[in-house]
Amino acid sequence: MTDPTHPDADASDATVERALRVGLDDFELSDEDRALLDADGADSDEEGEAGGRPVVAIIGRPNVGKSTLVNRVIGRREAVVEDVPGVTRDRVAYDAEWSGRDFTLVDTGGWEVDASGIHLRVAEQAEVAIELADAVLFVVDATVGATDTDEAVVKLLRRSKKPVVLVANKVDDQRIEAEAAALWSFGLGQPWPVSALHGRGTGDALDALLEVLPEKSAVAAYQRGGPRRVALVGRPNVGKSSLLNKLAGEDRVVVDNVAGTTRDPVDELIELGGQTWRFVDTAGIRRRVHMTRGADFYASLRTQAAIEKAEVAVVLIDAEDNIAEQDIRVVQQVIDAGRALVLAFNKWDLLDEERRHYLEREIERDLAMVSWAPRVNVSARTGRHLERLVPALEVALDSWDQRIPTGKLNSFLGEVVAAHPHPVRSGKQPRILFATQVSTRPPRFVIFASGFIEAGYRRFLERRLREQFGFEGTPIELSVRVREKRRR
Image (cartoon, rainbow, N blue to C red):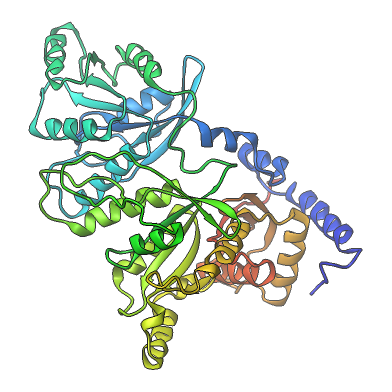
């Protein structure tokens, strides 16, 4: 392996990069490919701007035309539209613009009362979307009128205290405008009659939206600059409140999720290790009055919102108990959100040697997918080893921000592939043509290849990247673009 500190290493890396770039000319590349390569892996200014754009969530029960409205606003058919309730299940974000104002539009699945199964997950995503939005477009089917589910959504929106623009959809002609006017009964202000399918009235509704939309997002997932944002998350009763109070050096008000009450989220500014950290509000979204079951649902909801507002998540695990499925689920949420990760094992002072032995075995078995995450063993009750939390947070955030120069990345991958080539399948062996890191937070890599790269080999490449460059405490994303040779 070439010594990266050698004086000639940078020149050698640059030579490798130039040669590989020239070689790419022999392959069919899209305009998007070329733009990515021309950017040379530098984070664009647009990424920072996107972090400050106001966010608009589109909410409503199933099949009221939310995705059709999304397509109308963004000016292209991108959101999946089908005349069947429940086609959209996850939150999907789109860049949108109206009257010179840029904003992010978040499409959600249909919100339903007393949802269960997959519909419960849909409702969860819709509620998180409201929590992380600056304003809401509430879409109602004017041809059906106000339903019990619509009334329940109105209660949810009132508790959120977010600005709401009421859109009465499917008003295809003047005959249905009277039905739209009946929606004044919601008490959300003027219902804007719209036909998302034909475009009728959408401009007026968007004008109304811009009047309540802030210039910059107040709830962006994370902002560059200022105190680093930390989410303290974990399943119920693992000691999150105790740890937060111990870190703060005093008892802070910890809001319990009392049914039906509202709350103003307050992020805690805490001095640790000589610097200020912002611990994001983990009280989360309130329990809905009409929901009498589903504690796991609300725990997941609070966790999701906290993670997405943070840069790094500290997942607190009760070391006395066996590692539970819910612990693993919280860790996976952090990975899926692309946030930096630190594992904190609480109540360490109460463990005997036998329990420590078995806990190590559980960690190896159940948390193998995050063997790269820093671990701290703490006691929220006594404050033991809490000083180790700051170095772990700093390591994770440094890795989350880390960028590998393109030349160095390609030189390294070249040596790895030469020593361990991709297996031959059906008489063919795919070649790695070029690689670049397209962004940080978390680190994302794109590999151009002459053929399909198997999942096992991708995991091998990720493991070698971690061995060489660290990335301790951050998920990394590695995607492959298969490109064919130009036809002469």
